[in-house]
Image 1 (cartoon, rainbow, N blue to C red):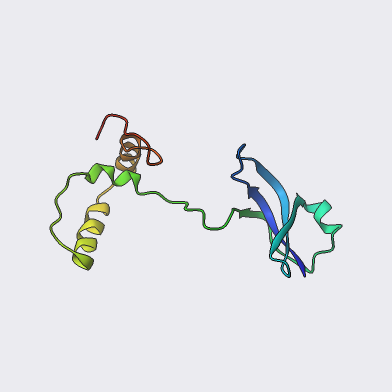
Image 2 (image 1 turned 90 degrees about the vertical axis):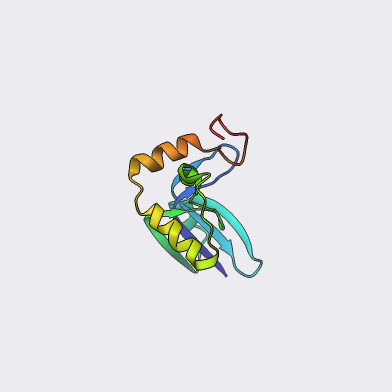
Amino acid sequence: MLYGIRGSILTLDERDRFLKHHVVLVDSERGVVHGVLPYEKALEHRPEFIVGGRRYLVTPGLVNTHTHIPMYVFKGTPIRKTGFEWLRQVWAMESCLKPRHVYYGALAGPLRGGPSNGFT
């Protein structure tokens, strides 16, 4: 069965292309992507059904869309607890953060696991 996933597609390929109003056609019997086409062109392949819509964003699976890098502002803070008690204390600290703290924490922290920028 051929089905479609409709939306604007963030490819995460080598050029980080962003394809507006496209459809990912999936062959569910073979478990493969049949193609990525503009919406009108995808309809020519007569998918069984299409999920999503013009205002949806389609991203590759298992893409981590969050980061802990703003937590850099807490680096070196001793928390001598374990398990849930540790987590409660970290959450209490995080609740005090304002947008500017997150911004500067992100600037100060090392990017993508690479070398630090001099703050470590």
